[in-house]
View 1: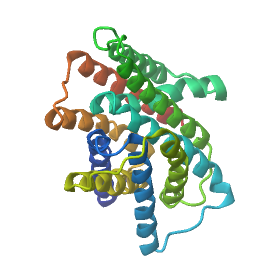
View 2: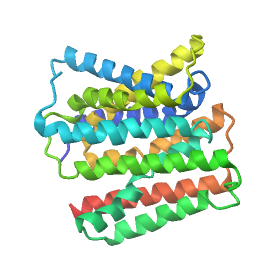
View 3: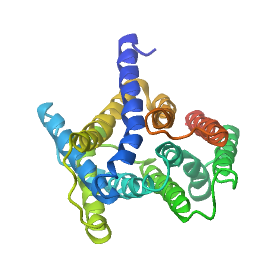
View 4: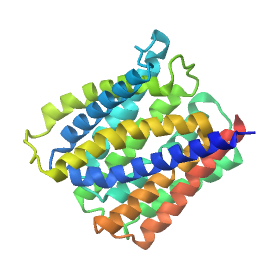
Length: 298
């Protein structure tokens, strides 16, 4: 039985992780008004890497990744962080932050069928129901009544978020059978440094150079993005997994999109439409069932 004290600590980390990631989406939406999306992404992950390095150094846990951990560094650094943040930061320039968060969190819906097709795993009843529910939610979000298919910007933004979720799923598939030598938290700064290397060329080649307006608001936004939305959020999730387990943490983190949507509605003036609400319920419900289905399988 889980120690009640450890459970309380784990729940505190989980709640902190939910809000850290949930508030990140509105922060990104505001931040890209000051700095091109790709540059905002590059600066954010670089700050996150430095903060995690400092935290681990103070705790005496900063170590270079082992050769055996390099696949996890590469998959997370490139797919889960580098490509993902590049895509979603660009996307929020075109679509509401709340909608982007919901689509960006749809990763388990792509992982579930992939493990059946490529790894020969069984499609359990919970998994199947979860995938159907989640894809139904995506269909709701992409129906012509909700999405103007003649709006190129909207199509780009939505498409980039879906691509980001698929990119994230590639890293998850790679890590399913990974044997950890260093902890995920210890690998975090190296993954973020690699993500910086991935995003920086795109920033230089594709983003128009622009000096940010070093206003108080911009400093707060980029600080939140790097320190809280990246470094502290990764620390909270890693700690929550340690105390509560991966399944509880994964299901709990579904609160992230809900926080993002509520915050975007309250502070950015975004509209919570009936179809967006319906898509939210279906997608998050589907992800929860897929996650629980994976837990029962194991």
